[in-house]
Length: 211
Image 1 (cartoon, helix red, strand yellow):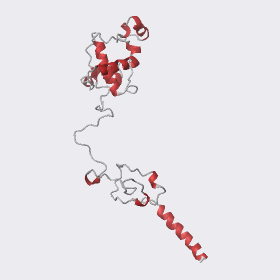
Image 2 (spheres, one colour):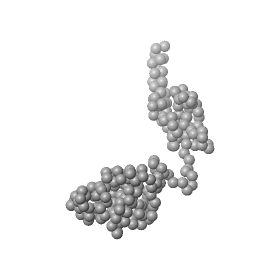
Image 3 (cartoon, one colour):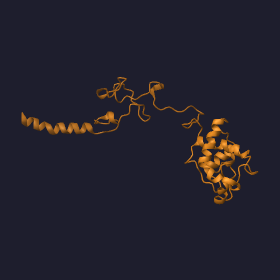
Image 4 (cartoon, helix red, strand yellow):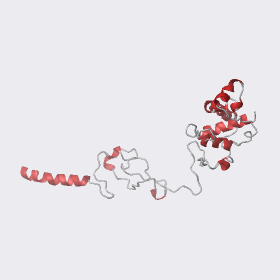
């Protein structure tokens, strides 16, 4: 009897090892699969069998561990094409900004998506003082600044005033573009300042242009 059991050991090992081999759509035996099979919908897989993986499932809905289809979509699909003509918005609800460095003329036509409110302008002023004051001066007078802003003219020569003839009529879209991509000696600040904050600064710069 013992000899027969010894003879069966290699056969059992072959069967177990073969069962662990993944091939095609068969993943083979998996060790603790609940550790790496995601319960949420996965876009690249669609298992419609609600009992798949039931033997190891601890899901609250009682379905198998591997079931991941979306019952709210036609054919229980996990991935669907977006509605024609729609554009994905950013996390803050704004449309993606896609104007490149060569698109200044078109970018200048873009309207500020943020409302013209005291709260927005107050936050724009705070951000301006944080990111722009050191080059443009607290009142936007650039290298022409006097008094407390005189240090700007001493360090950054040639910075124009926002209310100068050449700058007072620039649109907020233009200002946003310059903050994003830079212009002349000014470096781009898109990596330091979020899209929403750039629009807030542009809103406040509009006030400085009118002073």
